[in-house]
Image (cartoon, rainbow, N blue to C red; front, side, top):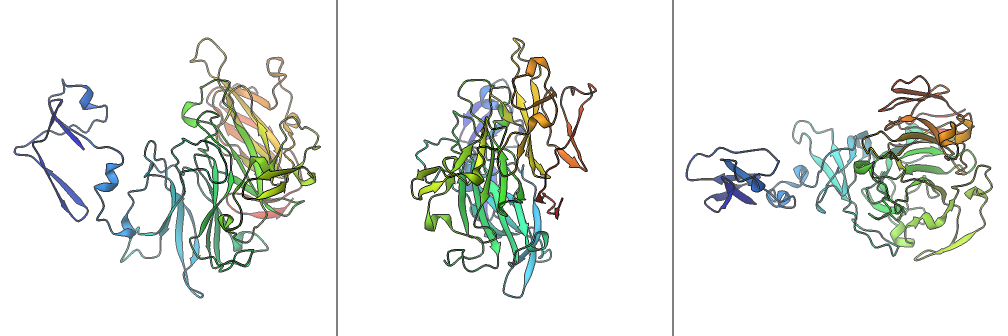
Length: 442
C-alpha cells in the first residue's frame, strides 16, 4: 500500500486491524480521492490518494472467517447456478455454484469456483459452503503457459431431475476457465469413481485442455453448452476461444478454435489425475475442412500417444480452426443436433474504427462437420469463408426458439439492415440438454 499527499509519497500514517476491519489514521483530517485514474502519476492533484496492490487485498482481510472469505472473488462475470446438494445420506440443501470471476493481473484472485449456502439465511446469510481452487497451470502437456487464470464462465450443472440415466443426488459441475482448461467437480452423493476409487463431495479434476497460450490467443471468456449425443449417448461439451478484451487484434499467430468433446465417464465422476493426464486437442479430430462427415471422431481409428495416458484413439471430440484472426464472441448454442457459434472477424479496412464482420458457424454436434452452408449462401465478398456472413459488428449469443435462431448484432444484419439477425435452424435428430436442462427427443 502506498499513500500520497498532493502526489508525494508519505509515511505519516498508522494502520490498525480489528478483526476484518482495517483502519488508516492520520494526524489531521484529509480529503480522500477515490478516483482510480492514478493519483501517483498526477502530482497536481491536491489531496490524499491510496494505492493498494491487487495481491494486498487478500492480506488486508486475513482474519475473515472462512465462510465469509470472498477475497478470492474477482469481477463476477459468472452467473450462479442453483440446485440441491447432498449434505448427508438423507439431507440436502440449496446452494449456488459460480465461477470466482475475473482476477485480471492477480494469480490469487478468480481462479476457482464458489459453492454458496442458500439455506441458512438466519445464522450465516451469504456464507461460503466451499471455495474450490482451480489450478493456474496446464497439467499433462509441455505447453509454456503464461496466462493468469480466471474462471469467468457460468458452470454447466447437470442434476438427476434434468436428464435420464442418473442415479446420483446433487450435481456434476463442468466449468471452463480463461486458460482453456475444463474442470469437473463432484457435488453429488457419489462415493466411488467409475474406476472404483474413493471420491468425496467437492472433489475436482481437470478433464480437458485447449493448449492455450497468450500467443495463440485461445482464451476462454465464455461459457460452454452441452448435449447428450444421439449416436454416442455421451455427454458432449462445446466451447470456443478468443480474446474478448481484444476482439480487433489481428496477427498471424492467433489460432482460435471451435471445440466439441465428450466426457465418456459421465454420469460418473472420475479423478483424472489418479489415472491419466487430462485429454486435450491431441485426442480430437481436426475437422476444419470437413463438410461431409468423413473425419467424424466417432468413426476414428487414428491413434495418438498422450503423455501420462498412452495411445488413445482420436475419438474424444473435434475442433475447427478459425481463420483471419477470428474469435468466438459469445457462448455456443446447441439445438437439434447442431452447435452454433457466433464469430467476429476484425476489420481489414485501413480505418480501424470500421466494424468487423459477424459470422455464424453451424457444426454437427458429434462429428464436427461444418453445416454452415445449410444456413445460407455467402455474398461474393465472403464466398470463401467457412461460416455464414450475417452482418457487421459483434454478434451476441444465438437464441433458439422453435426452428428459428435469433441474435443481436452491434452493426447491421445482412437481411434487413437492422440490429437483429434471424436464421432458420438446421433440423437434425438429437437428445439435447440446454442450459435450462430440458431434455427430449426431436
